[in-house]
Structure formats: structure tokens, C-alpha cells
Amino acid sequence: LFAWAYLVLVPTAWYGAARASRALVVCATLFAISIAETAVIGVTGLTAWVFVAAAAIVLLPVRPAIAIAGVLAVIATVVPQYIKSWDVHDLQWGVGGAGARASVAVFAFTRLIRANHELAAARAALAVLAAERERLRIARDLHDLLGHSLTTVTLKAALARRLVDSDPGRAKAEIEAVERLARESLADTRNAVAGYREVRLATELATAQEVLAAAG
Image 1: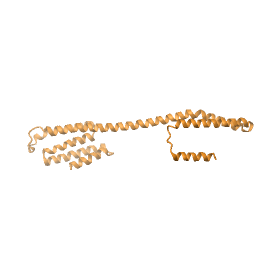
Image 2: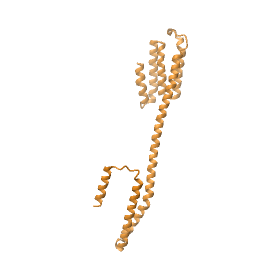
Image 3: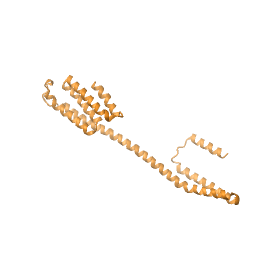
Image 4: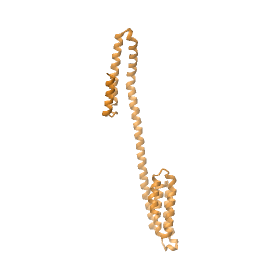
């Protein structure tokens, strides 16, 4: 029963969404089972406290976990000699020491796991920030690249519209200038985004179809 509780409840509380609320319940359950076990088989049942301490280290915050592990180690070392039915006459350093050593090892292991999780989360956050900065940089570059050109194109197109009746020759020259500026802006834009756009055959075919259809 204790092995089942340890192997099932501890991982459930570790990975579960309500981990904080389950931790104390799991540790209390393991402790209660270990007490019942000790009442049946005697002093050797205290070895289960090694796993109770490990569960506390894994599931609980640092200070209460260390306090629980320390108290269990001290009790397992000192108390057995005062229980006459167990026929123990010395301090049980084996059980207490095992609990202390296991607690230190599990504490280091869990700190390493948490540090790795925090590092992965920090890397993910940095990746998101880097992507946001890159998008802002591209947007700023495109704004600087196209802002002046589009403004000039708009003004020249408006001028050509006004001149189309009174001065067709100049209107034609303005339209040619608009076309030239548009081509230059298109080329600059393509050069700017060439490194950020993934070229796919389906996308290129669809683009070519639209361009050809527009050109008749």
C-alpha cells in the first residue's frame, strides 16, 4: 500500500494542476501509512520515512520540507530505543542517516529540475521577445523604405490626374515616373524581406497567377 501510494500519489501531485493543495495531503497519507506499517512490523517500518521525507522535499516548499525531513530523521534515530517492544537499545543512525542523505540528494535533484524548467521558460520568453523585436525592426525598415516612395507616388499620381486633360504630355511623364518609383519600391521591398520570407511553390504559383491575370 505504501509503495502504491508513493509511486502513484507523488507523481500525480508533482505534475497535477492543483499540486500545492495536494502536496500536504499526499505527505500526510504517506506518513499515516508508514505509522500503520511500523505498528505492524516494528522498527524496520521506519525506513519508509526515507520516502516520506523525499516526498516532502519534492512536493513542499523548501523550508517546511527541510523541517519535516529533519524531524523525521531525528525521531527515527532517537525514539526507537525508548519503545520497549522493539528491543532497541541504541540510537538508530542507519535509519536517520539514510533519511538525511536521501533528503539532501532529492533536494539537489529537485532544485536541478526546477532550475531547468525555469531556464527553459526564460529561453522561451527571450525567443518571444527576440521575435517581437525582429518584427518591429522589419516594420520600421519597411516604413522607412516605403514611406517616402509611396508619398511621392501618391503626389505624382494626383498631379497626373489633374494634368491628363490640360497637359497630356506631362501627365504621361508623371505616370512613367510613378511606374518607375513603383518598380524601384517593389525591388527594394523584395530585397528587404528576402531573408525573412519562406519561398514555397504553391505560394509562388498563386502569386504568379494573380499577377498574370492582372496583366491580362
